[in-house]
Every structure is written in C-alpha cells, then in structure tokens.
Length: 161
Image: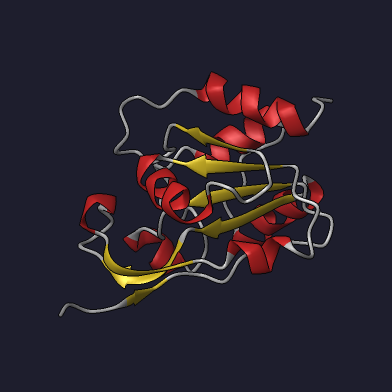
C-alpha cells in the first residue's frame, strides 16, 4: 500500500453561490497548501478574467477573490494514494461529504473541474439535487481546455459587470 495523501478542507462562505469541485490537489497545490497552486494551471486566470480582475498570485488575494465572488472550492477526493499529480493514478480514495457541505449553503451550481472528478462525482452524487456541469480541466496537462465553456457556466450563476 502506498502513501496516503490528504486534500484540503472545503473553502467556502455562508453566501457561496458556486462550488467548484476538483479531483485532488496537485503536488504544487499540496506544497502551497491551497487550491490550484500550480502557476501553469488556468484556474485563477480564467476566474479573474471572467470577473475583469487581475489574476491573484498571493494566497490572501486568491481567498479575497473567492469571497467577493461567492465561490467555494473543494475536491471530490479528500484522501487517496496518487502518483505525482496524475488523476489517472488515484486509488484507495475517500469521497468528500458534499451533502454535509451543501446542507448549510445555497449553492446554485456545481462546476466539476475535469473528467476524473466528474466520474467520481457521478458514482456518488448524481442525484444531489443541485445543478452540476462538468467542464474541461484547467490543468496544464489538459490540451483541450476551453475558456469559453467556463465563461458560459459562470454566466449561469453570475451576471458580468
């Protein structure tokens, strides 16, 4: 049995309207101790561009963006065995308690960031009672990223200023 790696607690606020659900933190994210820590990941650039803001680099600026824009973050896998950052190697995993998180929030949409997260989500939460959509992963390893699909989904929750 390999080393068990642990993910992050959910990051949310009482007024969060959107939950973005990834698979499991990358090596870089685990090193920086927050979501989407790899500078090559398109996540922060995409979210900040949608809202017409500068891309945050400092941790407090990232958290501030999420708070202002009512975005919650979590991963579908809370602990697992994984090789590097490769989703395809995730095994012996524990699934996040989404029902527990959602019972006190008014999430209007769950965006699932990538195929592995979506596969695990569907096996555990396909009838969760909150609208959800799978979008192309923001990972730098994904050559099929489509920013416009992300913008379309974000428009479902937020009106652009």
